[in-house]
Length: 292
Image (tube, rainbow, N blue to C red):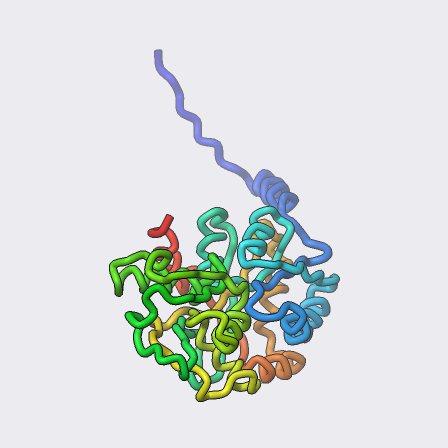
């Protein structure tokens, strides 16, 4: 018995209705829900990002609601659950989110001005810091010491230090140090070293630079015992279920030459926004995948 294989070709009308049906499934988020990983004090972040929020509201013609997140993981969970539409993640938390939902898209990052420990551009480093007056002079001198990490989903405050310590000592980070705590933010990790609560901390170079710039840390107060290779700066991402016209307007808010954002850039020691894609974070995604 012969069978006939049929190929169905969609005409212009059918394509129109198919595209309309697909568009109807997208989310035109009103209000737009925006979240930030807690790199520092949440209220400080909100004040600093207020100009960006106002530009988004103007261009999107809708309210932007800030979702308060207590951890990096909470932002990832919100994106996956659909309760967050737009977010600033760290490279590792982006890798975590992307591994579970490939539609989450990185599109922008800050381009920063140079600082004492960070070169200009869209990269930073993970640093291991100690108090200068405590006598620590190498990773070996920190064997069984008290160490502060930032968050289990932090790139410079956990993922890369965990990889580096294992490679350098042949001992897992969790066993190399005597006591490990999670500070919750880079600023608090720096403070735990200052106050002698821990012997050392892994933090990002740009957060250390900001502490120096704001005079909450003296240049002679800490020293650096290790630094990582350059890391692509934190991505802004949107969930892929958003409607394309909304996505286009979000990008317009970030990349439009808007004078209203200049004060925010100056406050953060940033030059502006840079366009990024998933390729900028491929190495971090591979490191994250290898530890699973």
